Amino acid sequence: MSLEQMLRLFAVAALACNAATVVVLFRRARGRQLSARTVTGIAAALAVGATLGSLYLSEIAHLEPCRWCWFQRIAMYPLALVLVIGQLVRDRGVYRYGLPMCVVGAAMSTWHYLLQHFPGLEGATTCSLTSPCTVRYAWEFGFVSIPYMAGSAFILVGVLLNLSRRRS
Figure: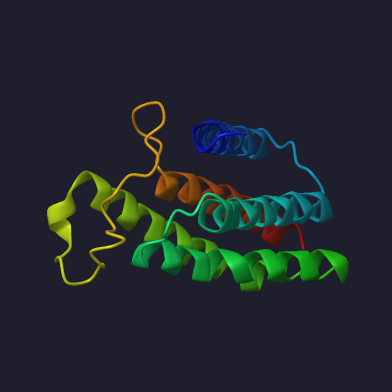
């Protein structure tokens, strides 16, 4: 599969995360809920998928991550590990560790996405010349970039963890 096809697949997955976020919130508002274990399992799978996707982009597709991409990875990689371990040991309080990582990761993704739209927001000295933070390796459907994809995953995982918090 080519890089363009993989980026399109990742973009569709990000949009699916957006749709799932709306569905989960709608179901919550209507009183329909999944079990806390199911919710944290889905959150763990999403975080692992996002981690593997970012590794694919850098290690297989050879896209060099910029500074803000690394910051997002700093939030996503341990999030995946924490959620998988929490799921394996049936820790009902795993949201305490995962939710802050989701909030920070979503904030960094949002900032990075804004930098891609408005490059003047950040000084030229903070990102390298070889891997500028404003470059768009992906721009699917006219708005979905890699930071958008990461932000979509952070937000859905955060919503799921918040729901598990209310049930534990």
